[in-house]
Amino acid sequence: MHGEPAWSFLYRKMIPVLVSAGFRVVVPDQVGFGRTDKPVQRSDYTYHNHVQWMSAWLEAQNLSGITLFCQDWGP
Image 1 (tube, rainbow, N blue to C red):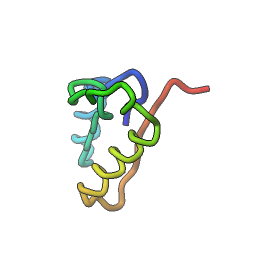
Image 2: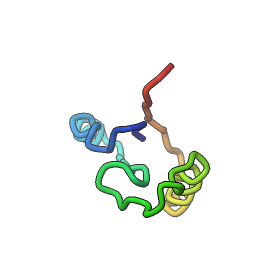
Image 3: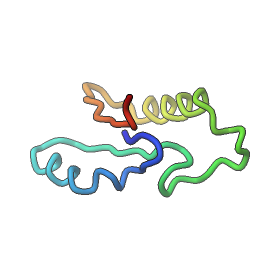
């Protein structure tokens, strides 16, 4: 999962390597980043909403035994 202000395109060179190694790779974009739809109201861009949106997406995928690979700007 990418951090701000990136999108899943960031992983375009890593995905084929992981797939070739036998992994299933699922690369969601955070809502409002990359090519996802953008919330209409600026006030929708909250930490709480992003957690809700990504939690709902993850639960809907019904994934199990996952390894989360993520990055952000860091400290």
